[in-house]
Image (cartoon, rainbow, N blue to C red):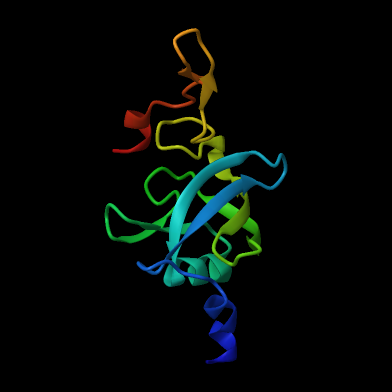
Length: 134
């Protein structure tokens, strides 16, 4: 084990070589999104201080903002107590983290109803996704 990769070896990667990663606004503490990282994505994130993830649907690295311009500048990388979740404290450039054009991916809030409950949209679309992704 090389000293250069020792910190990556401490991460408990799942059976697919992935770990969940939470992107949190460094200034407000708001959780903006959750994605997956493989070893290469985490290493590149640490090296460049830009959010890089692994897209399971495309089976490749996904550099946040590569199409939209909404990059994530990373100020801190943390690992949870079980070594199986990464937390990125970030500045979300452009203020949009979600592919739906909203600030956060967590724009739906559970609201109890007489029928049992419903998901209510709590955040507006800041920019039409068709204008973001060409």
